[in-house]
Amino acid sequence: MKHLVILLTITGFLLSCQQDKAAPTTGFPFHLPKEKPDRKMSAAMERIYTDYAAPQPQNNELFSQFKYTELEGFDYNGHDGTISRRDPSKILRYNDKYYVWYTHRQTSTPPQGAEKSNDTIPSSDWDLAEIWYATSEDGFSWEEQGVAIQRPNKPSVGWRSVTTTDILEWEGKYYLYYQGFMEASGKRGDDCPVAVSYADSPDGPWTPHNEIVIPNGAEGEWDQYSIHDPYPLVHNGKIYLYYKSDFGEKPHLVRMQGLAIADDPLGPFTKHPLNPVITSGHETSLFPFKQGVAALVYKDGPEHNTIQYAEDWVNFEIASITELMPYAAAPYVPDAFTDTKDGRGITWGVAHFINVTSNWKKFSSKLVRFDCDLSQDLHDPDMKKHRVVHKPDVYYRQGLTAKQRKRILEGS
Ligand code: AAL
Image (cartoon, rainbow, N blue to C red):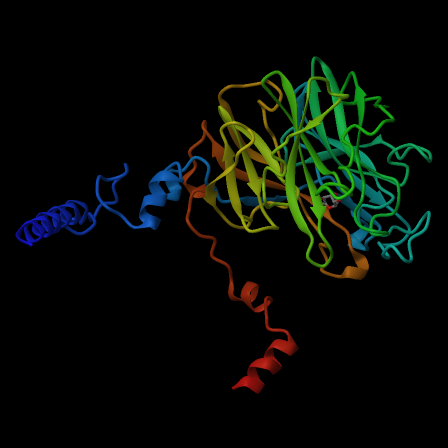
């Protein structure tokens, strides 16, 4: 018994010492330590030192706000829904000019839905579309150059619509990857594979590869119906092409990002065994950053409104949380194709606003410029503020529905 009492006393003493050692002797310091302090902390405090590049956003190179500027040089027929430009490509610099490619729809009517669509009536904003391009000296004022990729004749891939393109420069040649629709979007779903055309110059002429280059997944697999938003980068001497798929059933589609890798721009592309590699986002854009890759993950999913980072280009972690992110952001990524081991980051690009009139009967989209500071070579404190202050009418526009107001009043 005596020995038990002694043992319990010693154990109690050791535990209390352990407790005392871990418990902070003083409160958390007044000046937030830049490095992780040697003290027991809450999970949230641990996280700002382990999960983010810096404990405060203004010092986090992968945090930024976003600023928007209307572009000059594009006509939209008064946004009557008959002309739409959307889903821009990454920006390419060539012969002292910037180039951007995008989905261009010009139809006699605005989109009418899959039921009413036909050979001239579009089902959606990106149905019966072509790939057009424009050039600019400064990224603000653009000169539309016209069509780059036309819809091919049936039954070639993309005969219904060619949309949502992105550019790759590889060994002196240029490749445009794009969604190739073989039926009006919305018949079953937004279903399409990815095709590719190539040229010796960004000004074309573009030769269609006329084969599906990123195929849909096998039946029952997450990406069996849609391969969207092809986004090629160069890494480790290979083409890393990230893409989105919409899966599950409407109205609760799940949107995630996959990765397919190839040694040759015309394939074959091998889908990564860990796909999906990003759980959220929509038209997700990426850029080499230091030895890894960063991603702008907005709009859909549990981790929307985040900027993410994968040192191995596959396993992404949240690097920062932000807001008012660009839709379909297509950045100017100077080192997108240089196989860099020290990605410098981005400071601007083109994005889009969809349904610019908020009138579903006149649905059309427009291109816009965004600026940010996600660059190792820029430090713009005005891009690193913690919050965007909106005017009250922005909140009032997110008002209660009549049904919600009725529920509340009946419950009161
Ligand atoms: C876009 C992209 C793809 C989809 C549709 C047009 O935002 O995700 O291109 O198919 O929407």
